[in-house]
Amino acid sequence: MRRRWTFACAVLPLILLMPLNAQKQTAKVGCFDKTAVVVAFYRSPLWAETLRGKKEEQRRAKEANDTAKLKELEEWGGTQQELAHKQLAGEAPITNIVAALQPAFVEIERATKVSQVVPAPYGGKEESVDVTDALLDWLKADERTRQVIRNARKNGK
Image (tube, rainbow, N blue to C red; front, side, top):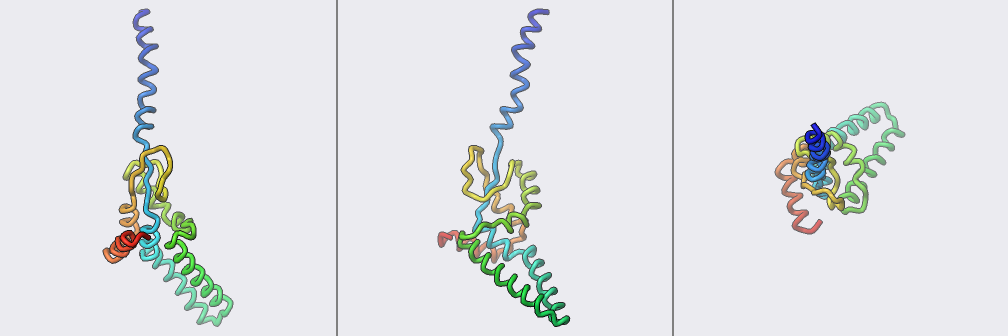
């Protein structure tokens, strides 16, 4: 009986710690190329739907002769265009894009078994996995968009 108790005391902590060690060793973070995702986002059906909604608002504002709403929408368009240019140049954060991609991040985290999805470069201790292609797929990036991204990478952007 004493031998069994000694064995249990010696082996049980090792068995209990095994899953924790295995999980730490396999923890991975999904990283994505910001430039690629910015290009794909602004060329995506997701963004096109946002623009369609704004164009419909503009049409209704014109019909109602709502000059204040028309001015607001014109300012929104200019602000969004400026933001997109700055994001592409790496001069503005991509918080609006990250917020829009939250459903994609959840799907990609499950599918690729990563703990989180973050922009590259990732400076943490966990191993990183490139999930850019998965995000491009989620954004329904067509071949033309992918070619634009490849060209941007070649040109160092």
